[in-house]
Length: 417
Image 1 (cartoon, rainbow, N blue to C red):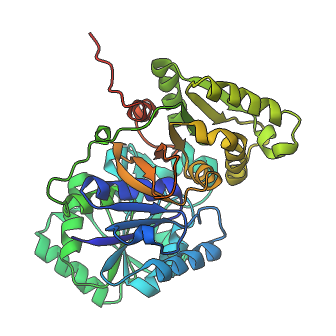
Image 2 (image 1 turned 90 degrees about the vertical axis):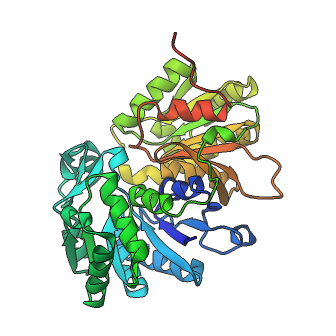
Image 3 (image 1 turned 30 degrees about the horizontal axis):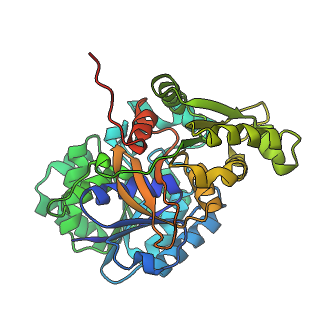
């Protein structure tokens, strides 16, 4: 069985990349701290949230390399998890790791979520990445070409077309070996289907080259599927969660998240509160802070499930995500011990809440749907261990939050007569 170290730049990414290995029967842990502890001793797969997405590129590179030095062990292979839409400092982080771990095999495609790579460029449901609303919100005017981003970070690259993935496994592995031996720093892989990624996974698992994987949850799932333990189960409903209200925290402002919240309200009847950004910017000193806490307290004390969202105003800036998420977590922290389950959308939001609740490690159990991970806190001394679901913001089907909510309530989808 392959033992894996995953380095991700945010928490939801660490979980959605690692969850395939949990489903394949690996004991899988996600940690918020790049420090080895007893909690990691029997894990086959360890995913580290380096929390580097919003750092300056040079700082992100240095922190990621330090995490690799701290967490890598003999026999562990490296998977650098990157966002399938190339958010964050991914190229700088890959450049920092390349000198330590060999050739970077760059394959961000995640066909199950509509992300493909063609001619070295990412497409989202067939639309060029740079034309999507998500890219325009955070990266308007920036180049979305993979090779150009790697070059800007100091790495020369070659490209492997999708046609090459249809070669037999042995010849493809030999080709990868030759590229690594020839000094290729980064190999960009076009992939437009799960079959393409599976072929890449097969070839790289047979390769003898010094390399590390760079990808989203898509390639990770294919690697996991080829390294499955006997009798592995991937049914999220095999876990049973304790009672208590479900808290749903949403920091993402994507249209995808809007649709997911709408279905949760309509089908689950979940109460929704939208917290104005001005309240979160002001924190405990804002005049309305206590009244918002009181509204949350009323719902929690009545045992009602609650959907709590960060609003948007004219002063909104994507760079303030950490600040707003940290304030949202502080707003609800006094009532966290009352919940039976947490669903957190957006890596910054999930990390902020877990940090406020002093949860450093998660044991991944399974997934609700592709990339939506179910976990429990991994701490033998902890009395309050709610079920926890994490999901990237602009990710998942319209059904994702509702399905996660049903999972934490130990319920199945009602049958339609």
